[in-house]
Image (cartoon, rainbow, N blue to C red; front, side, top):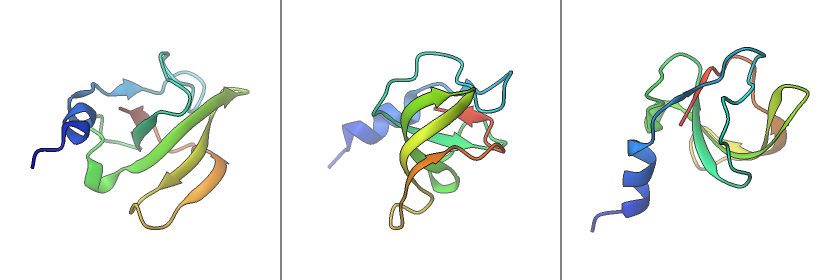
Length: 87
């Protein structure tokens, strides 16, 4: 069976988090899932941080929850400063 939701994630273009560290380039939607990566603009699913965007506060992206392996989750925290791309 083909998973339409995975297809939608794969086809979204990467956004560069530029200027102030972690500031979104715009268009982030609260409660939506994004992939974040420190160096690869493709944000490959197997090597990215999966995070639900909450808000931007003082130029920093805040996440509701995130996971690197989709098994262990971290809640209500800032996106680490090393992450430069999102999709």
